[in-house]
Image 1 (cartoon, rainbow, N blue to C red):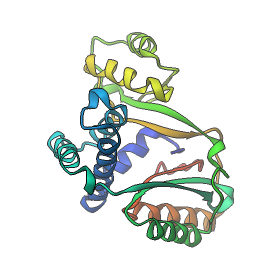
Image 2 (image 1 turned 60 degrees about the horizontal axis):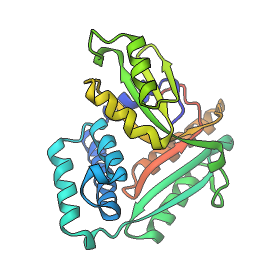
Image 3 (image 1 turned 180 degrees about the vertical axis):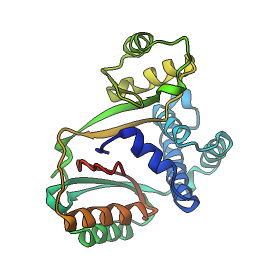
Image 4 (image 1 turned 180 degrees about the horizontal axis):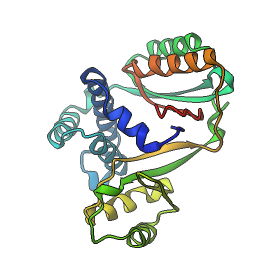
Length: 248
């Protein structure tokens, strides 16, 4: 998501209370199950599963929990009955919002997403109404303190570029590495082999431009919309182009 600091955004999310962390793990478990259903339980042969595992690890989901989720899904694929859906619309001040869900009840999910938009002063739009404002990218965030002492910034640039990275952005807290979606795994694996952990690693949607909200009521409504969506178990990902200086 857009914001003052991507690293601050990640740390804010990871610092949430146990209930919020439980919701995050539930969503990650659904992603793992769906990946297994559509591509099998072997990450080497299933790119979608590799992406889901990388995202789960970057969210500090324990390895044994990841393994159990994969084995459970592989052992009873018929029980994995979630379906995906994407909703697009506008928040206060014309902020573009995309909501991705995995649900076992599409009507419930649609109703709850619509309710969040309405209560947050926004409105749902038609399919494709805002998706053209976002680019799909692979994104990895590396904290400076996590990089081995013998690895220089130039070394990191060369390592990721050789693996297929498109962009390398230095920030105060660390580095943002951007890839094409199809090159994400190669770059992530190159970093893993070099023992360089990512605080965040995922294929995501990046806004081409951002919107700034200054009216107090719009700020209140936008935060309410995001909070309501975050509370929904069916909601997997929310992308928006709000430039939020609070870093939330």
